Length: 390
Ligand SMILES: Nc1ncnc2c1ncn2[C@@H]1O[C@H](COP(=O)(O)OP(=O)(O)O)[C@@H](O)[C@H]1O
Ligand SMILES: N[C@@H](CCC(=O)OP(=O)(O)O)C(=O)O
Image 1 (cartoon, rainbow, N blue to C red):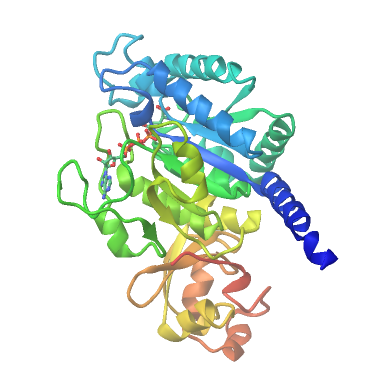
Image 2 (image 1 turned 180 degrees about the vertical axis):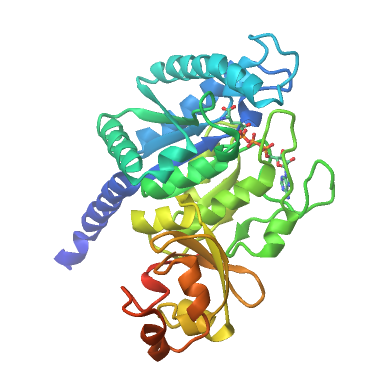
């Protein structure tokens, strides 16, 4: 009887422990698109920035660490520098971003200061992610900023990014940040309250998806481009981001936060948007790099037996399973691997030069050494240097 009397207290302690656990483990990456921060005529919507700063402050009050990935530099700057509409040429966008990024950061600083929060600017390019050293440095800096209680505010370094290597939209950037920093959620905020069966701007009877368990080609087929004159990637690039993040073990929300408390609801699983689930645990940085940041230099086409061994058997790829080798690469480079239906299966680090591989593809392992002489490794791709992306 006496033990039962203490139950509520025990429950309370357990609940408090849960709260502590929540506090320690919640790290949320919030991505805000240009469409949520500016209007078609450009310039910043200061009321929107004040709103998002208050929402983020609300998440932090509940113990979450928040990292912000924000677009809006080009949209914020193009009018001030004299362009009547959002520019399309790269050097014009870069000039607009040089003006707009400063305005954007100033607006965030002012808005966060009202909540006693320090905002810290981090500008990244895609090439920063190609170098493991630069990437590790950025991660260490961000961890330190979070330890000091700041909100890291990321954007692409538009003024120095070169066209072929640009993220363009910030959706991919937000997924890479979420994976690298091992976030517990990625919340992608936009002007639409989720993924619909067609772009609601052009398909009025489109229906909304509340939950997506697997990103299939059908999901890609319904996701269209940008809807507004300021947005860049549209829903398609948000699905790309969801694919990268969920593959890295980070669940994703894509939707809208327009009323006070919406961001909390989004983080809690009841937001105005679509949830992309994941059952995977976070990926080691090496595999993140291999899957999402490296540049493949060749393509291998493999047969059905090799697909089974690689994807379901947990085995390495052997020469006997390779049917065709495309591209020009050396041992140690990254290659993409396609199945018999020409669909991408994943990426790996290849152990042969392309010419060597062409001469041994399709051969059983016992014939490799007689053919090539001594080899460093028999496998074409070792399973530890492979990531499935299907
Ligand atoms: N299937 C779809 N469901 C919802 N929105 C879609 C879909 N296909 C395309 N879109 C468009 O994607 C737009 C959001 O992307 P974007 O304009 O790049 O915004 P942001 O600037 O917030 O990144 C929406 O305004 C909508 O018009
Ligand atoms: N880095 C760019 C992002 C461009 C952009 O429009 O992105 P998004 O609104 O996320 O589709 C900027 O700050 O203007």
